[in-house]
Length: 178
Image (cartoon, rainbow, N blue to C red; front, top):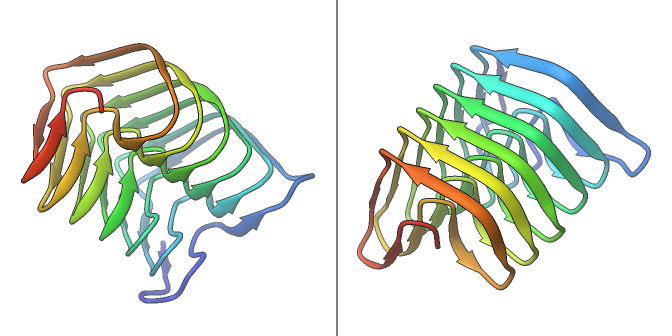
């Protein structure tokens, strides 16, 4: 468990650097509480995260909160969140709170992602292309605007996304995908 409530860059790695790699790991029953840029693996990712699963965990933070990386600026691929709850303020996502690079092969199953606004089942605020995304039997809940089953707010593209048996609720700007 990681408890740094109110502190930024809270995760196993505060910043996963450009030479860093986290690969073929499953994190089970992890509780993380932090401030902005909170996740299980990295507060901020500029490295490589591949074939990682977060299962049965609870993550609570502020802006840019997720199960994998609060802010993602590098590779995330073949990553799953299962039976996991993520709660933050804005830019809250199952995999990344804010994403700035192309990512893919992501699954969120029985996940609960919630916050105030810009909330997505996979990414809260997206600025890149994402592909091969599945969100199944999950709940995405925001109190304000920009709430989506896959992405809360996107300036990028979405290719091959499936959302099934998922409830998405919010005030305005609510969508099944984005």
